[in-house]
Image (tube, rainbow over all chains, first blue to last red; front, side, top):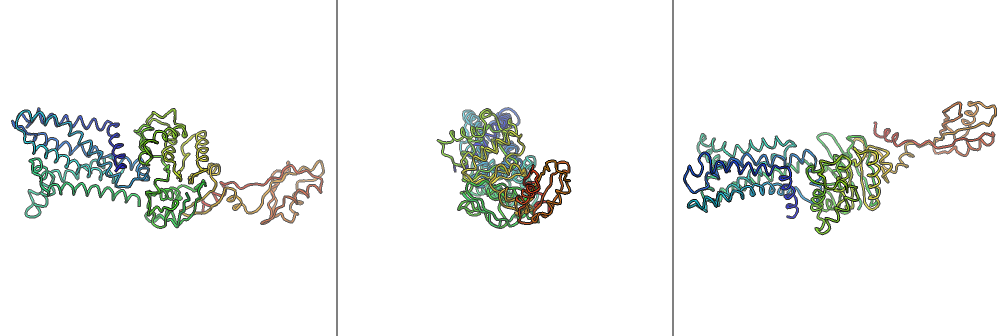
Length: 239
Length: 313
């Protein structure tokens, strides 16, 4: 546990040292702020005391930002060879993978924490559905964790950050909207399977305030598969 | 802590990078790992550090096996990889602190250890810089500092002086020699003089196999086999030609072959027969003829020649 934290801390530090963290925070808050308060179907346009508008924007911005955060996590270490020094320390592959995963997730949680003033403001404007808002945040964290896990995996398979980024985006697109798009055209059981694989299906139900075990299982499966695959790649590179 | 490599084999595709090699390094010994590029030095070292999984065989560091107790080995080993990979964006002190934490050094001792390493590796003037801002020589020192910070019992150094200037090379060699007194050290190089200067024992590896193992001295002797001496003779004004001296040398029983090096100076290379020495006979021959010996020195085979002979096949 201590080793995981040592690795996470360094990763988080490197996000801030390289300015990535600041750019991500500013861009995320800028986008979500703009579309929540000022432009498009914002809160004043919808005239409801709800953070649905914010969740909709965050859903898309995180989809783009997370691959940009995760792309260097293993690719850079593979390229410079620091991975070799890291794995010959008294840590195992799992501690490294989870340490990196948690660092990125923590940065996202920090970004989301900065939007709590939105929540407080809207709560003062009218009767907000507290339950749905909290589960909305929970949904964003689960989606983020899924994308971080996918991004870390794609970063591990090569030593090129761009490959990691594009591949994470490509896999993300499948879950983000391609599956649900295809589901509309497909029929029968095929359609049901595709709907289940679509992240948007699960996010919609969670952000409405419904926490269903099948949604939770879905997100945890993606996270688990992503992390297991990453560990498998690390093992393969050493044999 | 002894290192015992047992029947280690590592195959990349169809190539046997390391082919069934076995050797042992004892505590307090500095072993030099020599070989041409691609001979399998780095692969062997990576297997010892637990980074690479071998196809066959095992390595034991002390009582621990790389297959069964890699975590125990990792705690006791210090490793400087060939390319000296470092987190470029980190300041030196932060990096060393990160390493110290991962190596499980007690919180209270970390600061003290970092300062010791900074001092030992001569990084005092640079300690507040980021690693990316350092010259290659200083980066190499950071590489050594990270390998030494947890006071490991075993040190694996892959080409520790590559890219350094001659002054830095001497400093790093001294450092390794000092460290090597108490620890088990394996260092690889393809600079022969370096290995000769720092190592107690030399292992030459070629195409994944060990082709020689011994001290620099014994390797030279082994390659040489027969005694070769350089002989210089001053005839003290007598009317004797170089060819006469040549004939006399040739007539000594233990001499197999004589070469004239310089006619004017009367110098010769004299090779003795297998296992025999002609030194005394040459001296007596000169005395009985009333000549003076101006030179009588053994010709040593250079380590370069040994290396070439063993690895060029």
